[in-house]
Image 1: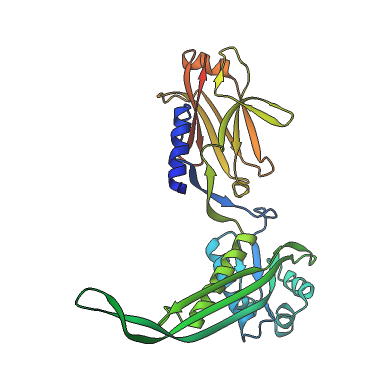
Image 2: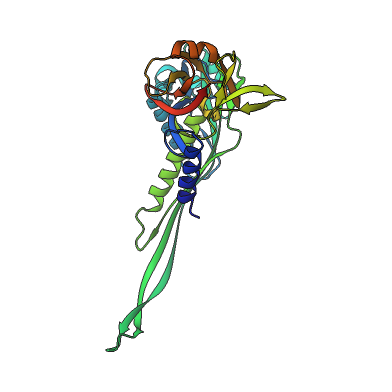
Length: 340
């Protein structure tokens, strides 16, 4: 069975069980993915030329310049690139700031007074390669009876161009040189083009790989808008209780019940993003209960408490109700339940 067929079959089963979903088997939502260390009071960051261990002349400056530009476009920080620093540092301080002693660089930049952190790093790989091979493809002819035969061969050169980039980076506090955050593993990317001729030359391939690595670094050191996928069947459910760290899921509650949990399960990228839950009577518009909150990735799955008896009293008594989950102005998930 194909994945799309499985998805359709699963959806039919869920609908048959009375689980009305928005968006099928999964739903994509936009969030601001925020690094663990980030707080809004970190406002100014300098990006100095990265050290180069790749052997590619200028690789450190290429990456740091691309990274500074990308962080400027991101907008989370006021960014000082190497050209900015050249205008405010004297020759001796500039040499220290751009040198290999990262702690000394942080101390030097702290003297500026308005630079809170500095991004330093190392380019371990920056390479552009090309490999060409002579190949032959058969050229077919056909007899009057329609039988195919090899009439000859077409000879051509097949080329693969490839770019590889690998970088590590750290964000240091200029006040004391301590590390605020660092890449847990190198940011790495490979980009290739192949054909006769390929669509891009080796330099274009390594430039694309460098851009990909820079995007990874921005995501690690600044908040970024990102699309994530949530499960339409598991992300939003209703439960009666949590016992031994396990939810008792149900979609039916008594009009006398005082507790109902709306259980959310969201990916870590949703951390610190604002969301909203509302409850309405089916096919009605009046919000009978509302909870607004910011997600904490430590939850994993978290149950928000509602009162079925109060909901029934406001909604006209027993009947069909619905939970709606918002990540913006429109609901992205719905979950029906019954009050009897």
